[in-house]
Image (tube, rainbow, N blue to C red; front, side, top):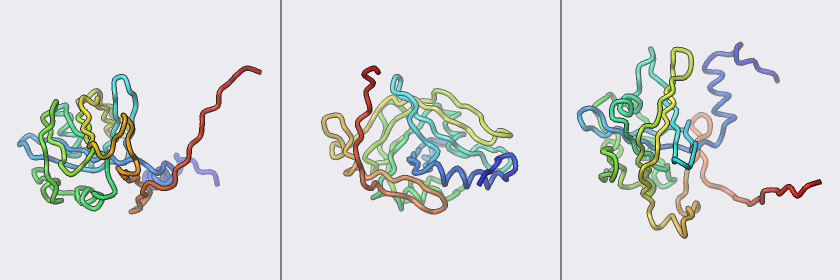
Amino acid sequence: MLLDPNHLTDLEVYKLLIGLVAPRPIAFVTTLDENGVVNAAPFSFFNALCSDPPLLSISVGRKEGGAYKDTSRNIRRTGEFVVHVTEERLIELINHTSCPYPPGISEVERAGLHTLPSVKVHVPRVAECRVAMECRLHQVLELGNGPDTDLIIGEVVCFHIDDAVIENGKIKLAELGPVGRLAGTEYTKLGERFSLERPTYRGD
């Protein structure tokens, strides 16, 4: 089958992308609104970009008519946010924060989660999450026709990692239990793993 995106609807292209680019890591992001209310939301268009400095990217689609989502608006205003790893043991609570509550309502509170103060940013982190990365805004790229998407790039200025999920500087993935996003309502847990050594070129 040959598909030309120019001959597909936006929804059809979106469905292809989320089905093909999978599994996707999920950033669970907290921000602060202008009244100090903690906003929280999961985003699966998320990845690491660079290690020096440590940069993360989160793609945040806009609302109908091009209005910013709370996460994007808050980050643009404060220049700060916190990214948490989405763990299997918390997935139901984190999924609850994807509910489209109106501005001024804390998804953290509605999900029954709690917050702790961060160290280098004003945005609180979620107490139940064992990994949190405090971020300062590095850059926002406006993408898409409209534009309709904000690609937010943040620099990690502080890592919070529970001792239970790290050993000798390496993350214990089986213990952490990260969850990945698939298409539709489907998610995936950490499954079977295998190792492959990178090949070395020794000359012809």
